[in-house]
Image 1 (cartoon, one colour):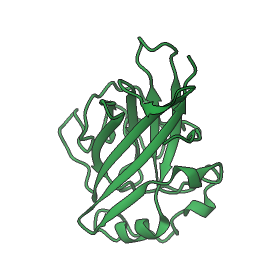
Image 2: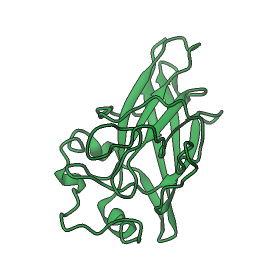
Image 3: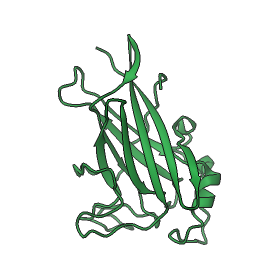
Length: 199
């Protein structure tokens, strides 16, 4: 965790929904749950400064991603047209170990992008120096091949974009790979973020 983690583009689909929840599979508007393989995600955030590396406590961690069909919530543009829905979005606040935990689904994909989860970390308003970090987290292609055999994920004629064919992944994506375990009943994913803060 004591290595600074690279940032990547936020992308066009961040919406600051203020949804404080660990299980982001449902849409709070109508209670519907997005189908897909369960994914239990732990993100641990560390602060890197002149004293070394220690857990960053009280930071807000937002995640958002597409569903098994490759669709984002609360987007007006084609092909999504999901304005007003709020599935697969939420935030948690880091605990004493610098950790947050989410329950979601293994993401699907859409043309031009490999499978990924967006992540944004913001320090609290009382922090000595406010910080915002934004990036994307990625999956091993072989594990995605296995996960996407599940019935919730459509089998398309067009091949899925893989990590090597994603231009955003090429920008430090190998440093943003999730550590995955599990099988056909669901997956556990872990990632450690190191943030440089200067007092």
